[in-house]
Structures are given as structure tokens and as C-alpha cells.
Amino acid sequence: MRIDSRELLAVGIFGCRSRLGDRVEMLLRRSRTFSPRMSKARTGFGMAILSGLLLAASLMPRWIAFAQQPARPSFEVASVRIDTTCSDGETEKFSPGRLTVTCIKLSSLIQAAYSRFADGKTGNGPHLTIAGSPEWMASARFDIAATASGESPMEEMFGPMLRSLLEERFRLKTHREARELPVYALTALKSGPRVKPWKESDCIPVDLKHANDPSPDFCGMSARMSGPHVTDEARGMTMTEIAERMLGNRLDRPVVDRTGLAGRFDAHLEFDRDSAETSGLSIFTAVQEQLGLKLTPAKGPVEILVIDHAEKADAN
Image 1 (tube, rainbow, N blue to C red):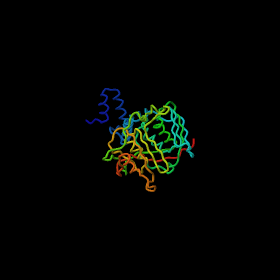
Image 2 (image 1 turned 60 degrees about the horizontal axis):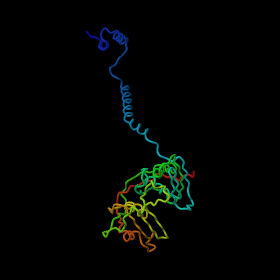
Image 3 (image 1 turned 30 degrees about the vertical axis):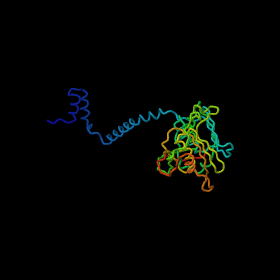
Image 4 (image 1 turned 180 degrees about the horizontal axis):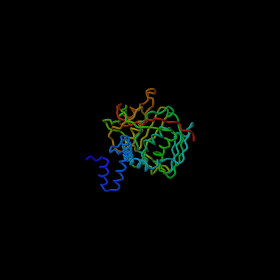
């Protein structure tokens, strides 16, 4: 005796005496069709929804983390204008929550914001090699007066806040790369270095807690120029700082410290720019004779800050 499969379905699910089963059987007998197989369209639609839910679930922690990120530090009010006179030379003035710089190059601002004060906590970031600078960056100078909403410390203003200002007003876009480039390796002569070990009484290492003292005697570098003659003075600087800032700023390629000398030092260096033309003392000879160090051409990995885009800030 053959029993229709639709009847078996109704009875098997609800029982032979179930009123609900009778109703289902009645519906099935009225030429209603039932297929145990889902259509391909419905299967695809269901899989698409399931995939979307799984993707959303995987991205949810990132969305939450992004939403919880603190607001990027920035100045409440800032004025930027091109300085065409630079009558007083490059100057920097600051107090908690206020920053003023005059006659400054964009490259100097980038060094402060993206390197030296990049972490917003110290002023010890390494010197950066900048690539991709537009031509106007070599000569254009700017005055900036900026005020924060609170008494922000100097390191935060010269770091994250200045970085926000540069990206907003100068439309600055950058990325970092590690490149194998020509460098000068700084090493010590066999006769020994002639730099003087630093004494704590000589100067104060750059400590932003003393930044607003009446006349803080900070360690660091000073320079004097008379015609082609240059006098550089380093006080309480590490050998890496002497290599990167004191010497690297005077040469056509980065200087890498390979002396192995730890601690802080005082160094006095005198040389002539364009020594080949003036028959004066070159920086290479001066480094050997006066510092007991040597600059040797070499190659090495150098972190590069590449400028992808920059515009002159509008006067505002």
C-alpha cells in the first residue's frame, strides 16, 4: 500500500492524531507543493548574509578601538604667515599653552614635530633625513603664533600639536622609508678622541621642566660664522648627537656614529666652508685634528622622511 510522501511528512512531524498535522495534510492535498531542498537563490542569499555578519563581527573590535581613540592634540588658535624680512633671525618663545616661532624654515618645524619631539614627551628624537622637499622649502620662512586650550607643555606643543598644524595649514603629507644610502661613518682615531667629557656643572641637559626658567643654561650646540669661517660648539652632547646634528648639518650626507663612545661630551670645532676655494681648513681635517675623530665615506641604512605633498601656508 503506497502512502503519499506528503502525508508521511505531516504524520511524522506532528503525529497521526494531531489537529495541526491534519491541517498540514489538508494543505498538502490542496496541490500545495513542498520541497525539502532550498532554492539556490535562497542559499546564496543566506550565505551572503552570514558572511556579512561574520565580517562585521571580525571588524567590531577595530571599530570599537577607533571610536575610543583620544582626540588628536592640536592648537585651539594658530596664526601662520610668511616672513619676508627675518630682521631678528630665527627665534623661539614658549610658555605653557603658548608657542611662538619667527623666521623659521619648514624643514626645522618638521624636524621638531616628526623627530625630536615626535613622542610628545621628550626632546631626544633622532635627526631625520628629509627627502622630496619642494624647491620653496629651501628659502621660505614663516612666523607662527599658536595657543592651546590648556597649559600644554613644550614637548607636546613642539611634537603632536605642531604636527597637526603642519598637516592642516601646510597640507603636509609624509611617509617613512629605510634606504641604503651614502653616509659618513664617524670613528675615533687610534690616538684617541680629543673631545672633553662633560661635567654636570657645565650646563643643563635639555630638560623641558626648566624650559621656562629665566635663563636656562641648556647643553646643546651653538654656532658662529664670520665669512667662510665657522665655529661650532657642542656642550653636554652625546656622540650620536654630535654626529647627527653638529656634523650632519654641515655635510652633504648623514653622519652615523660608530665611535662606540658613551656619555656626554664638549667639543669645539673650527673650519672653513668651501675650503677648496678659500684654501682654508676643511671640516674633515678639522674633525681629525681638533676632535681626534674621523669621517669616512660609507653606506648604511638611513631612515628617511619623504615629503609626498606640501603647500605654502596661507596668511591667516
